[in-house]
Length: 85
Image (tube, rainbow, N blue to C red; front, side):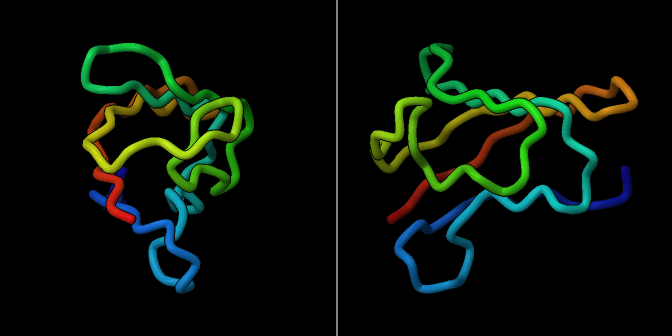
């Protein structure tokens, strides 16, 4: 994978870095965890729909979150992303 995954989002509706942009990847599943390892968000066939909310649509607090991306060819990519409103 030659693309660089962004390290932060600022979901404040200014049109810049509002969502976790994974358009360069063919994402089968995205799972987001908080710092305690609790799953807070998951989505199959992800298309840039994470704006710092949990799976119920509630706004998450500003913090660092960890992700597991599973691509359609079976690769797993892990890392972190910071939410700053």
